[in-house]
Picture: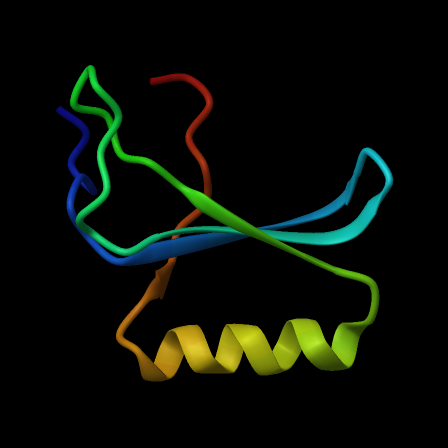
Length: 71
């Protein structure tokens, strides 16, 4: 199990496909059938809405965590 499993966390990605800004976030509860964490996503076209969403995540107790692709 990953050391961040169950922790409220999010990751911001830029220029993914046609999306300008993409935020994937895990609320600490949702899981896939195999037990791995399930991430929801939000897509933004402008930085003002992106920053407002990120601020809301911080206020809700989320921490920014970089995705570790080598797990």
